[in-house]
Length: 328
Ligand code: ATP
Ligand code: MG
Image (tube, rainbow, N blue to C red; front, side):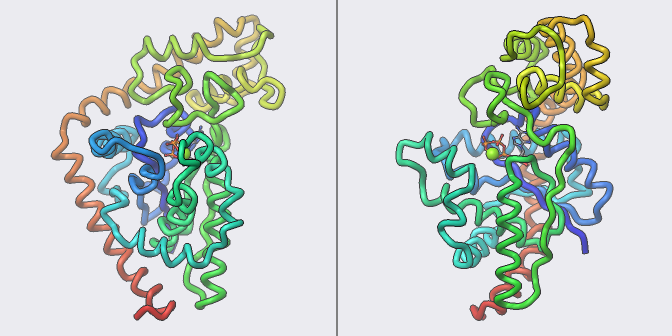
C-alpha cells in the first residue's frame, strides 16, 4: 500500500526553503495518501554538536511549526524519531549492507564535516544510513524532500534493493516527490549555496517566525548581481532568479509571468515586491506558531500519540527484518 514518510531536523525554526521545498507538500499529501508519517528527526540533529536544552526546545518548536504549516495530527502520524528505537536498530542492520565508499561521496558529509573541528563524527558519516532506515522502517513508497536529499534517496533505493536481493523481496523501492518550483531555495547571502537552518549568517535565511520588518530587511540585503533588470536565468543570474523562484512559489504564478509583470522595475524595487508577497504568505503561519509554541502540554501530547501510532507500524516491520536476517 502507498505510504509517505518524511523527516525534518530540529536544528532551528524552519525557513522558506524547508517550507516551499518540503513542508508545503507534506500538507497536501495528507489528503492524497491514506498513510502518512512525518518525523522530527532528533537523532540526525546530534550528528553535529547541539546544546541539550536548546535541542529539547527545538523539538517542540519544530512540532509547533509543522502544525502551523498545516500538518494535521489526525490525518498524519507526527512523532519524534528517538522515541521509536527501531530507527536506530534498523539503521545498524542496514549499515552492515552499505559500503564506506558509497557514503564518502555524499554531499552532506563533504560539506558538514569540513565545518567541524574533529573533521566530522562517525555519526555524521553514517547518518544517511539512519535516514535509509527512517524510510524503510515504514516500508514507505513516497518521500517528499528537497533537491539536497536526492542522493540520499538514491542510497535508500540501493540499500532496499541490496536487502531484497540478499534476503528476499521485502522493501518497496521508495520514490522522491519534489516540488517543481522550489526544489532548492538558495541562501539570500550566497546564491551558490542552499538556504539552511544551520547557516550561521542570520541574513541568509527567512524563517517562518520572522517579523515583517525582518523579512523586508533580509530581502533588501539579498545578494544579487550588478544588472538592475529582473530576469529569470538560474544558471547565469542565480541571485535574482532565486528571488523570482521564491515569488513564484508563494504566488503560484510562473517565473516568466512574474518577470513580465516586473518589467521596468529595478531589482531593488523588485526585492520589496517579493518581500511583501512572502509576508502575506507567512503571516498566518507565524501567528499560529506563536499561539502553539506556548502550549507545551499540547505539543508533547501530539508527539506521544504519534509515537504510539508510528511504533504500531514499525515494530512488525522490524521483527520481520530480524527474522529474515536470522536474528530471531
Ligand atoms: P540543516 O542545515 O540543519 O541540515 P536544513 O535547512 O538542511 O537544516 P533539514 O532538516 O536538513 O533542513 O531538511 C528538511 C527538509 O527541507 C528536507 O526535505 C530538505 O530536502 C528540505 N530542504 C532543506 N533546505 C532546502 C532548500 N534550501 N530548498 C528546498 N528544500 C530544502
Ligand atoms: Mg539539511
